[in-house]
Amino acid sequence: MTKKWSELSRSRQRAAVALATAQVGLAAAWTDLARRPASAVNGRKGLWALVIGVNFIGPPAWFLWGRR
Image 1 (tube, rainbow, N blue to C red):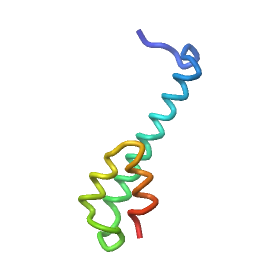
Image 2 (image 1 turned 45 degrees about the horizontal axis):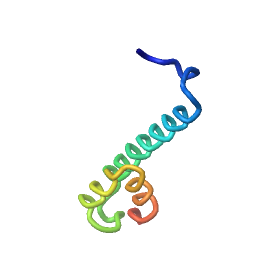
Image 3 (image 1 turned 180 degrees about the vertical axis):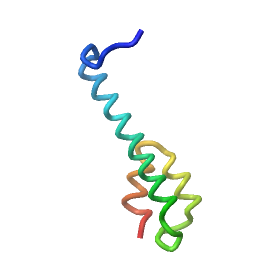
């Protein structure tokens, strides 16, 4: 059975927003990596693709340390 947003508890709403935000960050980081030339990346692109895949840690790491 599907629940409406208003039927979810506040904690479940917050969890859903946090998970959705993490997924958007993941997609944005991978898109940025794919479009960025290797010369504009600190390290190897393949390694960064793996690091980005670690949810909640990878995308922020990419945006903070992976780009030149």
